[in-house]
Length: 70
Image 1 (cartoon, rainbow, N blue to C red):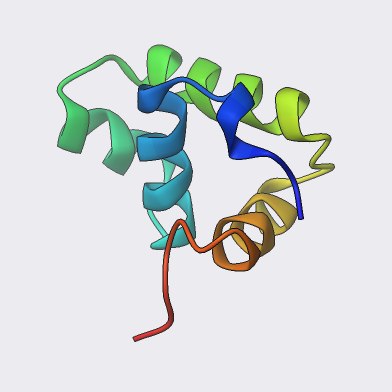
Image 2: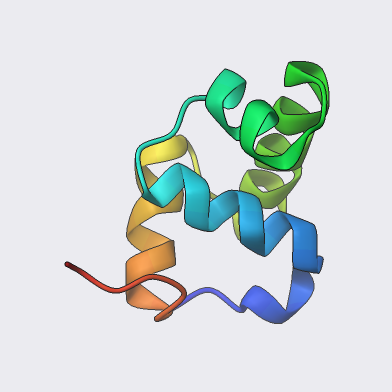
């Protein structure tokens, strides 16, 4: 299980939203940031955790307990 301690609070927040199925545009709208900023947060979280794609980021979010099913 990846160590989420390496992520900023914002990166964890964005990761949870990715796990909720939100697109970068939807994340940007929710957090009141630009789509480019949302994309940067997603990308940084992926790099820090070694995730190869958004799907793996979602898996990590569930495995780590950041989000729960249901």
